[in-house]
Image 1 (cartoon, helix red, strand yellow):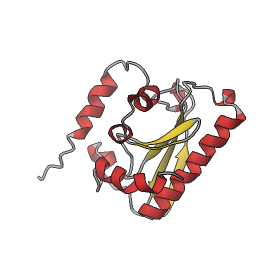
Image 2 (tube, helix red, strand yellow):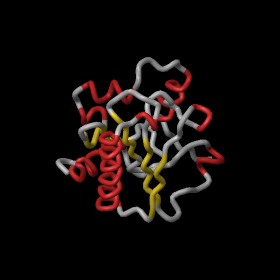
Image 3 (tube, rainbow, N blue to C red):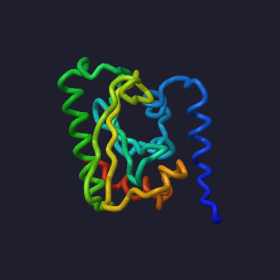
Length: 162
């Protein structure tokens, strides 16, 4: 039987076992190296970044700079900026990757599936007909046809200075 190696998956497994320190949605923008953090765009109140463990190529997240897990506590300026970042993200993906559709959503609270419940973030997942197969179910492995660095290289110009 042939083997399909996904060595990046071990990083995810090890990170999931450890108790997280800090908050990635606070720590990554503070680094100051957007390319290393896969930050594609900064707005006034939030930012867009690639998911380091994507469901599909181009899987982005939009998060506020302010550390909060309370959607109802966002002020109108924050909401408007985050909505605009969501719209720009979808536009960039449509222009560069031509997906057939999108899943856009957020999980509020750990019991709802939030891996980082204390910092709001929306997922933007581009979808193509036939993009799912047996591998996630049988092999617990996703097959992605593009490296994260290449996805960043393709999408960063689409979100620059919008």
